[in-house]
Image 1 (cartoon, rainbow, N blue to C red):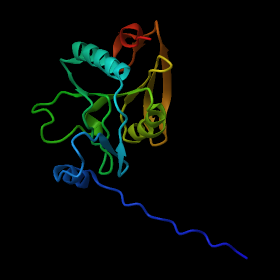
Image 2 (image 1 turned 90 degrees about the vertical axis):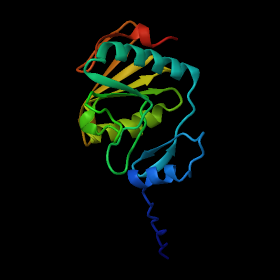
Image 3 (image 1 turned 180 degrees about the horizontal axis):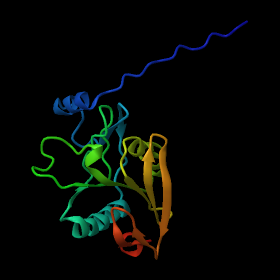
Length: 189
């Protein structure tokens, strides 16, 4: 006897426009932290104090170093395509006249995205970084708080980032976007 295969369920994927209309209609309670990833509304992890401290240190350093030619956005959306609007911990985007009041930055306006991860490490590595690479984001960092490392991902393609460099305490980060960031200023055990 041949067993019939179960029916394949097709998921409805939300567009960025529909997602915005849902938010405008009040469908998400104010305390809800969600982001749109590949058409799915994904709940975001609560922000722990160590996570917030790292984001604060990185944002302060990046603003001081890059303020003349770039804008540093903290936990604000980036519109990658019609189905994805993630909220990275930090985004370094080109400075443009009028800013981003009419639309969130698109991939061509993004220089660097940073995800700080403690409990969300696998989500950052396996979901968000491939999404960023496929969108052509030139550089993405994954700050691994448990391991006290920063993974710098460059050379994006549809398959992911082909270059990954891991920095540890005592190292100095030098990349196309950032020159001379001491790991000891960012990570504290």
